[in-house]
Amino acid sequence: MSSSAVPTELGTKPISALIKQYAVPGIIAMTASSLYNMVDSIYIGHIPDVGSLSIAGLAITFPLMNISTAFGTLVGVGAATMISVLLGQKNYKVACKVLSNEVILNILTGLIFTVITLLWMEPILRFFGASDATLPYASAYMTIIALGNMVTHLYFGLNSVVRASGNPKLAMGLTLFTVISNAILDPIFIFVLGLGVKGAAIATVLCQLMSLAYTLRYFLNQERFLHLPREISAYKVDWKIAKDSLAIGMGPFLMNLASCIVVLFINQQLVKWGGDLAIGAYGIVNRLVFLFVMIVMGFNQGMQPIAGYNFGARQYGRVREVYVKTALWATLVTTLGFIVSEFLARPAVEIFTNDPILIEKAANGLRKMNIVFGIVGFQMVTTNLFQCLGMVRKSIFLSLSRQLLFLLPCIYILPALLESEDGVWYSFPISDTIAAIITAIMAVGLLRKLGKLKDGEDPSVLGSQI
Image 1 (tube, one colour):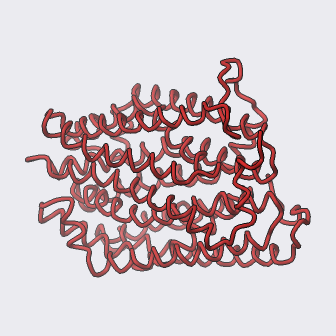
Image 2 (cartoon, one colour):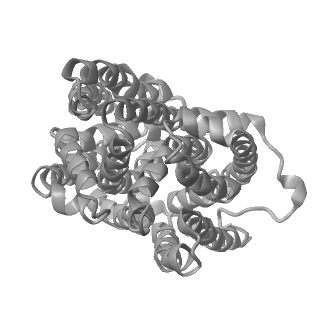
Image 3 (cartoon, one colour):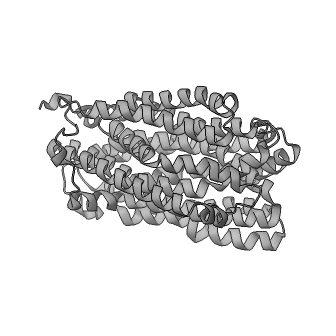
């Protein structure tokens, strides 16, 4: 197996060029992924007579979908991080074992989630804030998504590995294919076939299945330095690899799980203080914010193989450089999100609905929610850096601090104090500010430690868990 097939440029090419090479495909892919979700919402929001309730029903499914995403990232992110570091160490045999292990773990977690969701669908959705009016739409959408959950897990997990193995353009291309095909199939299933919200879910799963089929074919090519074995006997869980992979993925897993818990309480508070349309407003706001968050995640995906490879190769100056430059770009993105939220809120919201009450609620929420959104990009990149370097505890702490330690108490206290749904919206800038201060302190500490290390030295002083 030739080492020339391995992306050694990660350790030699200028960092700015690498960020452009790896982050741009990631940004395009993640932006497309956010548009993927927005397309569903836009079409669903314009279903005749029930558009506003349909959007509210879709918003009800967010916590449950976040749980699914949490388990997907638990497996996928950990595997991708391990593989990028192993490639930096030129340990190709173990990298292949990590890949096959990820497939089995994704299948297992996907099946478990599907069974639990289908068995207790109605009580789960009602717990997440569904009313008699919104339950039919939430249930119709989520049933199809649950049935295709294993496909979703494998698709997103293997797409991350494609990128981590040095082929960001293919990962981007597969995501773009999924988005474009979904935009074409959505109106066919929703309006032409008259399937409504169920049609949107069918289109989503079908598009992911097509991309997954190509990804599996890609990794079954035995000539690649990173590939899946063809022997069935190779597909059994290696618990040591699983433990290491799941430990690295625990940060984003807990972040997504915390997001689920937070959205649950957001929905409950919004129903209490603003009714079903307040949940619909949050669904719209969440989709718009998600666009900018996903662009930052694209930068994070570009940073991940560069930081992981160079940390594995003990080139610490390059690790620092990629972090600083990625954090700067991410901050510019979230600053743009702040500008859109404050000055273009109403036009942005009107893309999703023509209901005047829903438009007013969503525009109001978008303005208040993103008052300090500019600082979120830096926090996301810093959390990702700790994850890339295998510093699990610090990554987990930063992942959870904003959502559970700060946001959750605010969601409960502020609406009661203000006696309005505005209390929910103001909870976000308060928690973002506190979390950013803590993140800055931890980032400075890490950069100082990296600055003390000479290239080639043992990184144990950093407390690495890789």
